Image (cartoon, rainbow, N blue to C red; front, top):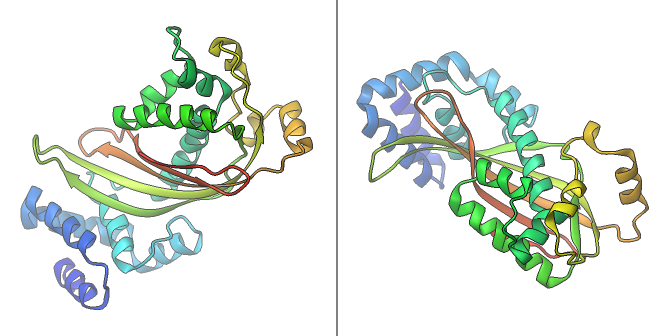
Length: 268
């Protein structure tokens, strides 16, 4: 059965078809049916039914419906070398842990509130790894959290990260091609009171580590002994990369929600 025919058959039984139709349109628009055939060949080679079933069983991908699943695997097949979804999942998990550690670090909160002339590594990291629009939104988010005086969030290690969506996009102006994959995760957090110390450089050393092995024993002990048990962060993050050349992923969107006692909500 052809790739086009299988898409059409799925559309008749899936009520969420807009994203899938846009995906197919972009593939045809940028390369005609030649590109469709190339994507089809990569699908057959890299994402047979048993492979996709295994990815879902291992919770590498967890789409809401068939159309989302098709968007994920067709996105992975657009670049010349198909994206290894397991490698992407692992890499995005590490990148997201680092990002959250920097976003919620005392130095970043202090920087967002006081806006000193002195650069700090947390902000430099976010400038490098996020789009300019998201970076600006994250600074505003950090300042807002400090003003709410709900305390500093201390993210704990991410234990599971799942790919939930994917897309192949074409810029309307310069016709540049990008692929994007969205991951979701939940992780516990603790919190400490926020004190405006006015010196981001002195706070820089307090950034929470980004993995189990990197978390200092004294920090882990302190978090465990904290009288405030914190709650859970629910995170959805979209990473984008140009199709041409090596895959160079950048964080494009970040949505964070949190349970009580700290209420966190931002969408950039």
